[in-house]
Length: 475
Image 1 (cartoon, rainbow, N blue to C red):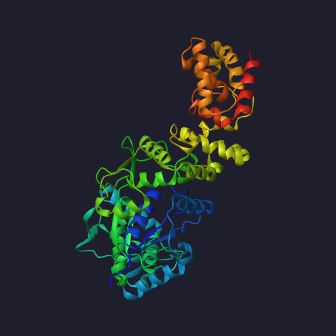
Image 2 (cartoon, rainbow, N blue to C red; image 1 turned 180 degrees about the vertical axis):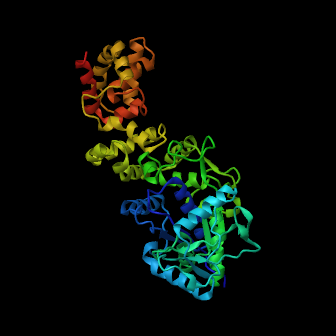
Image 3 (cartoon, rainbow, N blue to C red; image 1 turned 90 degrees about the vertical axis):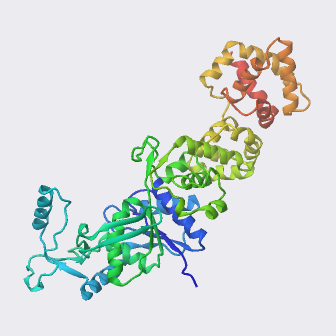
């Protein structure tokens, strides 16, 4: 019987779930789901000064919003410190680790000497084979791993290929600090082993850690998980990703009005390819995902591509479903709170009736909400400068001729209003746009909107005529 695949996502709660971390979580989630396994979640909160409860909640919330649901309970690394210390003591007992009494001054001297000789700073192993009876009484020791000095350590990486580290370049690193606190290097290995992790997928900034961690696995006689180190994300200009490129928390993308499904699809395609296919359903992503197709070079984050993908998802989402997504997102969107207060059943019906026209022009939920503002605006409508210009250049006079004809309509439908507007334009020797554009300005306060006749039908006779009357008195 084959071993169940277990992956893990292990963020540090020193900030929000950033976009690179979200992609790492996604790759772990896809791999686990494809192989019928589990993705576990571990919060690496050992840095007590920088770890915050708010960041922990933001990480969990971001994963839930993206639809990346982990298996089992969240593991908090700090609570396992006693277990980490036990393993350090076990390594001591096996002779695979030792107490090091080098002082801070000695360590500084080692660094300075290495720097002067043009070498990377490394601990020189001076306490590796010394008799503990020589230990100074005034120094609390650290515990270091007795790393192999000869040969090489090989990592067979699913993304990077075969990576070889000469053991002479890996020093005897610290497992337990002098105050008894476990180091990241030890805690990660113990937790991954105890959680049954079989596949580690993480950023390639951890590649050098893999060799050190493999030494701990081997010293404990544990099987080493498989590794896959994925390249980091760069900006569209090829520079390391920064806030100006999009290195923001997942919560910021929610506020910018992206759909979780679109962001998930975009992140999956960021550094992983499946031929020319761009758009995937959730099931298709799981089916297609393969670590062998993850690129070795850094992926480039491109807001334009993300926006276009989001626009595609919005247009492809059924109107009723998109409204529910919009309503759920209102607390996070700019101006969403004001809309939420007014969204009764009548307004919701109007929004649904306008949705096909609104989503055709929008690439984000914020743009969608902005386009729907005419439904929620108070009279008299605030006018954009271009709309005011249209009305001021003879537009109000034309609407004065149109309004009585509209008021006389027996049935208020898009087809009926269009017919009257066309007839009025013809009788005034105007092009349709010369009448329809001021009409749009008067009814929406702007020069762009869904089809103006659909707008009139959605607003209804009473509201449409009232907005036109406001412009008659504005002359």
